[in-house]
Length: 457
Image 1 (cartoon, rainbow, N blue to C red):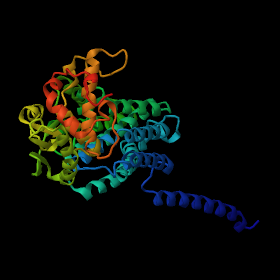
Image 2: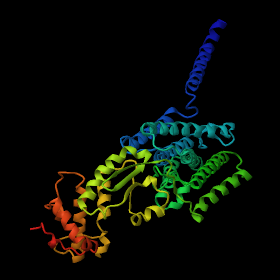
Image 3: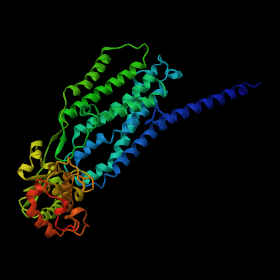
Image 4: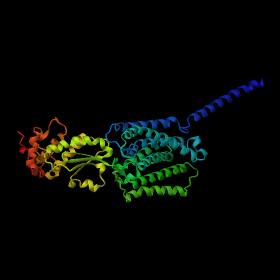
């Protein structure tokens, strides 16, 4: 047999092996953004994160009074559920690619040193965090078009660092449990971590968000924001080092590992011993004012577009009441407040504070706030805030119903031609105004019975 014939099969086998190696190399070369993870393991959670973020923020694009302070807080608020998805993806990657049953994932393998685990989490964090930021772009564009206030970088950095740290925590769950059970464990653990601020304020320094989102005129307190940023940096470091340590052979604790774990535990306890202030007043900017019928209306310059509507909705309510002395001297935007005392004692100084915030409905809030200023609180009736005119209603509840009806009627004055309702439905504006002038003291003491209303049959 010719030597050439004997060499031919080996040549074909070598060509097949070479082509397979070339194919593998080309796939790795063309997918550097995924290696060493399968693309679906990254693209699916990133797509879910993008869809969740767009869905959650899409309705806010048409909101009134958007501002940069609000957007800065929303970076953490909107990350609450997307980071759960990212943590679950990281746990799945660790559970699949580091379990000891894999021939290439034995504890003595050099590839399971520091580089490969960190490459896993870098790919997951990079894709999921990028998808999250892309999902925030429409809301960012909507805020930029209005341009009120300035961004607050501390809560933004804290939220993004927290996103990475909690994803690392999910990866740590996958490394520690080495099975698919790590995925629900990571999802549940991270979900609890992001939800705790809704249970108690003390957890705010250890999570992504405040219990509420501040807006123009307020700021997240700097000590709280810096503490959160430091805590998440510690958590990320401890989770990364512990993941690497769990994949080593033999496993030996080192001083840096012990220090990191103790530091994270200590940092998690401190906010419960010393509560941080959540927000501070920051009325940066000038005020824009207008005056009508003796009442001065002022809003933050970032809310200047809302001023004319506030005046248009509030002035008819004060005019319908009739008594100029009962109307406030000023109606002021809460974004202009400098402290709690100024707001709490606003009634004593003749100031009605109205909160202009992203997504507010002035057609609902301004008339109700204006009418609420003029009508006594239901607690003066002794009915514990309950009002009613049914057969089982107490005398206190029946008198409270008069105040509720008056407040509803006054609020409806902002909308000429609106159908009336309640005990004041059939009353003429001039008749109500005269009646209020004669019974203002009795209304203040909640002494008017529904049967006393002169326009009722």
